[in-house]
Image 1: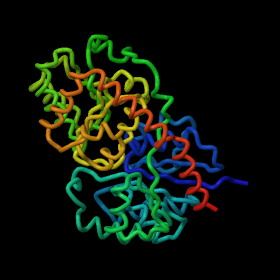
Image 2: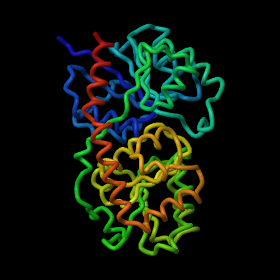
Image 3: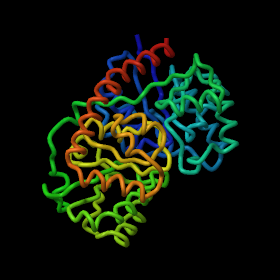
Image 4: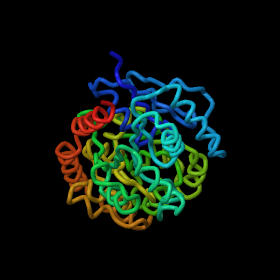
Amino acid sequence: MNKPKVLHVFPSFEVGGSQRRLVGYLNQTTASLDHYIYAMDGNYGASNAVKNFNKAPFPEKAIPKNNIRSAIGTCRSHLKAFNPDLLVSYNWGSIEWNIANIGKNVCPMMHIQDGFADDEHSGEKLTRRLMRQFMYKRCNAVVVPSNQLAQLAKTSWGIKINKLHYIPNGIDVNAFNHTKDLSLLAPHGVKDKHVIIGTIARLKPEKNIGRLIETFSLIENDFPEAKLVIVGDGIGMAALKMLAERICVQENVIFTGALETPENIVPAFDIFALSSDTEQMPISVLEAMAAGKPVVSTDVGDVRAMVAQDNAELVSGVDAGILAENIAALLNDAPRRLSLGNANQTLTRERYSLESMIQAYDDLFMSLTN
């Protein structure tokens, strides 16, 4: 008997939070399902981390985003030909697939909303909110990883409680729980004497890495042993490098590019910093917590509620000056860094286990494909 086919449609399968969550799930689930992934832009950068990667058997040509009618027609053709047992769409960028599936009623569908792009960080666009109301109500299930998004799904999109599923992101704590290893950073001149402020992010506008670079520029003269390490890639790389060269000491800001195995570098950080304009439940924060690191962050999404209670005061505001003040406080207090990191790691084991997340998704996928 053939296993049910689950089709995951991403606007892009580049390395990012929702992609890494699915990678973690696929690498450890034992549910009797066949999972296929389709990236609308043709970017499969996160696929190398999947042990058994199944790319959906669709033509290589990207779905046209500048012609909604043509895009929906292409999606309908793909759905009809592939005939999955469940369609899983991710965020606003895959809305064409929801529309196409309603038109053909090929299979049950589930939508996962992880957050919003830069053009909606201050609020939903009216046309998108109305479309979300119309489309996501017709999904068999809507999944969100944060309490903030759960509230929005109920009040803004009108998702009924029986269709709404809050599944917090989970992390393999043991993968990040190892000793500090500078081998990936040594080629950049990083030594044991240095104190590392690190972040992991796609270099896109909503992540506002420019704010973090500005933050570092405010404190680097007072902390000559500090280094800022930026792990990630994206459209903003060139501009961010230019900014760092202009306002910081060049060798103090390190761009590593994207890494498929963040567990090999996060334990080397002394402080994890997040400077986003918008987030919900960022995987990168969980990874830092799992590695036993203190977190300094803008006050976005569920971040303040995610970290240990004593760490919560370091999640505040959206201003570079506030971030600088909080990072400086930790740079001056190594025992506090250790204490907060230990508390974060303990909390991650108790509340954000990968096993719990996998079980929740297994149960949901199986219920929708049977």
